[in-house]
Length: 73
Image (cartoon, rainbow, N blue to C red; front, side, top):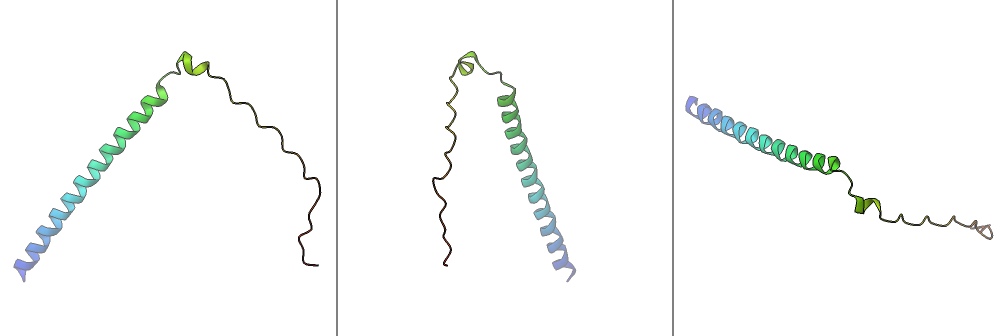
């Protein structure tokens, strides 16, 4: 019985190490992604992008010509 408990304890320790390394890898990937986004946000807008014309505003919606009564009366 003690031998079996030792095997289980060893197995749990190995699983804990695997989990820990997977979490560390995920954290490093997340930090890398955050650094890339941070660089994009910090990059100044170029003059070419500033000169792009703005899209025209959409015309205001017209009110409905007549009200519809959809009741079953």
